[in-house]
Image 1 (cartoon, one colour):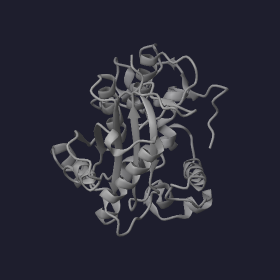
Image 2 (cartoon, rainbow, N blue to C red):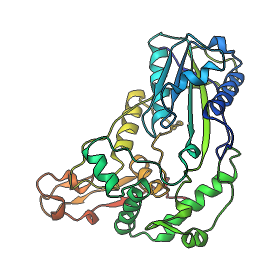
Image 3 (cartoon, helix red, strand yellow):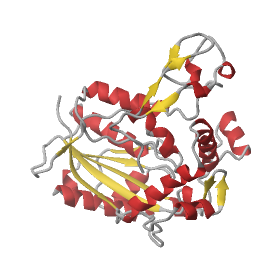
Amino acid sequence: MNAVHIAGVAMTPFGRHTGTHAPELAQRAILGALDDAGLELADVQAVYCANVFGGMILGQLVLRDLGLAGIPVYNVENACASGATAVHLARHALLADQYDTVLVFGIEQLTALGGGTIPMQRNDRMTDLYARAGLVLPAVYAMRGTRFLHERDATREDLAQVAVKNRRNGVLNEYAQQRTETSVEEVLASRMIADPLTLLQCCPSQVDGAAAVVLTKRRPTGEHAVRVLGSVVQSGLREAPGDDILDAEITARAARLASRRQAWTRPTSAWSSCTTPSRSPNCCTTKPCSWRRTARRCPCCARARRRSMAACRSIRAAACSRRDIRWAPPASRRWSN
């Protein structure tokens, strides 16, 4: 199979870019990625634009002012996975020999929304029900956080440590929006947004930013050529009443499928596009991929269950206690901040 390489990357700092329109932000990232790759605009054969709130044909608008007209432009919207989906589709086009070199960029300008939580869509009876119930994203993750505290015998301080860790990492990243450290005490003392999540445990919605990557079938001449080994896109399953809201099933399923397809036998770099507006999912989405569970016997059917209680099909969730299963981290993968 032909190899796909990353020839160049670039991004803008994330934050408030007052007076700058979305196309301008995207163009900065695009030109930076091409410069990093040592390529010209004329070398790009197709463009994939990832965006959610930018409106129709944003990719064409971005390229218009760059003078890059006439080539295929694909606008991709897949919520938080838009960027990863655009890379996935671009990689497939390269492997199918449709192109030799393509550009993928993502752009979002949330400050244009005016602040507050990200608007909820209301395009069917279920999304309309959720919107009328006030089920904004911080509320969704607050429910998961509450369940996490209950099921894992965790404390609010444990959840606060996630925000402390993220802020500490942000200090080291010149592109990050939040570059000041905080403490557990400051996190817990900040204004409550959706119990148990406080202000410092939620990602600010007033942020703009863009990033771009050049993918090519030609191996870069640099010393540190990066190859895209695999890419997987999955969608969620229909939820049952007894499903465990802490079980990041889609993340684990995608990770297993990607590793199985590539037959990874040694440690390698991997990333997921499950971006969230709250920091509590950090506790929930990491474990299915990197931790193992110890199975205990279900008291109702005497079967060892290695997944959630909903996996026991002979009974309803109410008959089994989720507490029968405990996480057991491998010795080499202790939970760390």
